[in-house]
Amino acid sequence: MSKKNEMIIKKENLLKEIEILLSYNPNESTSINPNYIEYLELNDLESIKANLIAKVGKLKQEDVLWLEQFKKYD
Image 1 (spheres, rainbow, N blue to C red):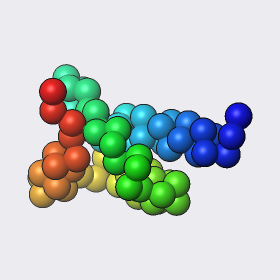
Image 2: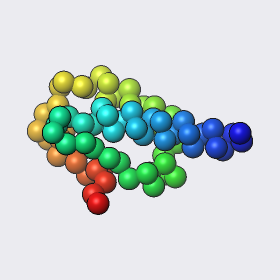
Image 3: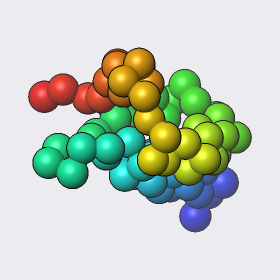
Image 4: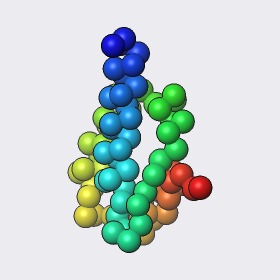
């Protein structure tokens, strides 16, 4: 497997983990547009995940509104 493919798989896995962390409403699943993988570096995704883990359970309404902008709508 090429390094590029490995990087894409790592990014996809991180994106899935971030989606799970963003699922603050148990009645809704959250999906992020997969096109963000093209624009975000691996360290960006890792940082987002770490920040979300640190904030889980501490969401304020303004945070929820900010997070909404990254949802993928069908």
